[in-house]
Amino acid sequence: MTRDLQLGPLSAPTQHAIHWFEQLQPSDLAHIDALYSADTFFKDPFNEVHHVAGVQAVFEHMFKRLHQPRFVVTNAFDSHADATNGGGACCLMWTFHFSVKADKAAKPWVIQGASHLRFNADGLITYHRDYWDAAEELYEQVPVLGSLMRWLKRQAMR
Image (cartoon, rainbow, N blue to C red; front, side, top):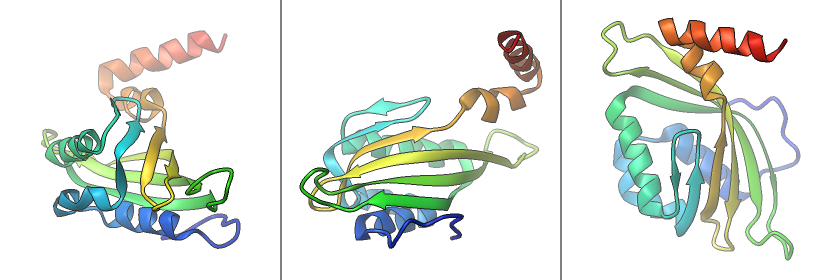
């Protein structure tokens, strides 16, 4: 794990989250409640769920559709727990490496994004919001759709 910038030491919940995401395997999903609270909120460009079972389903789907999905956290900073922010919060910048199982060529994909996490007083994630550009990172890479997406982007920039 490499970090471009680290603002002070990272809190234990942030360190735990980084380790969990970078080492994530399908068998870890049986213990997802050791990272997420029961009433957690998760949102990314394709999903929005409001409970830990929904988060588990998102990751199960990821492992079902993708070959060797792997997160690498490249930067992290956090705010430690205090009276104003409960269990604290962090931002993780990451790259996500994978190939699509249905793709016979097994083209490697790399997506860059960031996650905003909030923790409760027990250090469990209560809020997980992923930010990444699905249009640039995915749609523009698909042969016919990519041409259309790039054309739309050029038109919007005029």
